[in-house]
Amino acid sequence: MRIALAQINNTVGDLEANASKILSFARRADEEEAELVVFPELALTGYPPRDLIEKRSFLSRTACALDEIAKGSASLKAALVVGYVAQSGPHAALPAQNALAVIEKGRIVFDQRKMLLPTYDVFDEIRYFEPAESQSIFNFRGRRIALSICEDAWNDKMYWRRQRYDRDPVEELAKQGAEILISINASPWNLGKQAQRRSIFQATAKRFGFPVVYAHMVGGNDQLVFDGSSFGMMADGTVVASARSFEEDLIYLDPFAGIGDQHADHEDVTEAAYSALVLGTRDYIRKCGFRQVLVALSGGIDSALVAAVAADAVGPENVIGVGMPGPYSSDHSLADARSLAENLGMRFDVISINRGYEAMIQTLDPVFAGLPSDTTEENLQSRLRGVTLMALSNKLGALVLTTGNKSELAVGYCTLYGDMCGGLAVISDVPKTMVYRLSRVANVRRLAAGLPAAIPENTFVKPPSAELRPDQKDTDSLPEYEVLDRILAGYVEHYDSAEEIAEREELPLDLVRDVIRKVDRNEYKRQQAAPGLRITTKAFGLGRRFPIAHRFTE
Image (cartoon, rainbow, N blue to C red; front, side):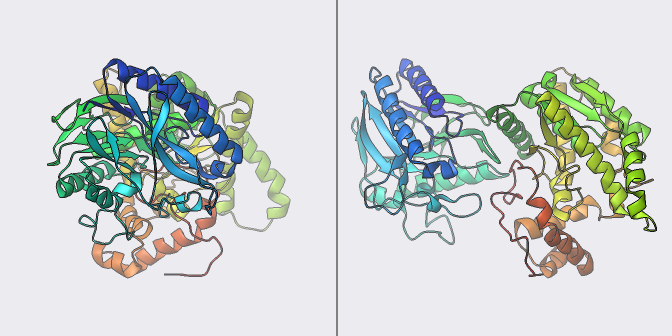
């Protein structure tokens, strides 16, 4: 059986454009004599559509768009497997279901609804979808096919020590005589996800003794990035076909014959993370309707990485760097920022905040009389930079990209309405220590393409500093980042206690407790931050939902 995996990048809610893309890929696959063209989960609507599902107009227009796909594919020899949002039956508690349709010769010949609805981490499907009560085999050209939607194939009781659900839909389909599993997916990427995904489905193939085909979405939708990396494997788990990561692709395979296209990038985890940031940034900018972006260039490693990602995402001609020296800015910071901009080939403007800072100090002096200088004056500098960026954003119609990393955001080492101003927090899920590794990747990629390294070497070696007071260094307020990131990984991503972290990492308990206190008391800041791209298993965003006003302490 010649199967095509159509790994598409769709836009949530853009039903007409998504339908057009589905038909375009289907025609290409049909020309290559594919018998079955498989699209990702919710390929027609985009994932996740969230509260759009609660609009009756969205459901009715989705049904119309699916009909248009059926009509448009009537002349094709190939059949299509398309994920979409279906309307539930008349007596269902919820109006919609996560569904797939098999379309052949202009009509829907088979329909399957998702049974297992995830409601953990970034997922909230049980809020929107009515679960299916049962599923059935699809008979297609002499083959008995098990068609599955994402989570339905992720509950193998032989793989997981603890199952989330009582039922195993794949096992139930296998008992009906399935000869192959075709799973359509929209599974957000995070570090290690590609390896985990293949491991799960290899276990499934070996357990049931049939080939497995995995079709996956690609693209960025708000905070989530989908990596593609679709694949097909034989019954023994041997991968015979792989699609590219982090870009659209169309691959062909016959898992019964053990043949297929191999387009995989085979990136290591840091390279994959960089690609995820580029893709997520590009799609957020374009899908939100922006063309240009603004990045505050401080001469530090964080802003340098964000600028490099932005230049790769939308082209350096669409990235505007802004240097905003203040009373404590060093000469090398401005020089490093200028060198970065020149290396990337992007516009660089310098706007001093000194006059504005002096004016604000004079304005506030009568109220501040007799009070000592403290972080108020430091934060004022950051907020003047935020005002400057937002003014440029208004005037130029450009999106501001914030430059704070996960380590800083975790402990509140950032200024509300200052450096947190912006529309997208590109590296808010990137720990500081990983910022350096990703920055090396950015330089290596440019050198491999015959371009100059983007980030100056001095930016890598100088001590991190906010430069808001004389001779300031980040370590004046925080532990070394190598230590801080180990603590944060345990507390933020795994919810370990202070005692567990201190013992495992061989760190002073008081130090760990101090970091945890900083994390807890800065929840109010994080929930006012710009949306950030998720690359770890636990980002500050959709998948982490703590109350702001509470008094539970570790």
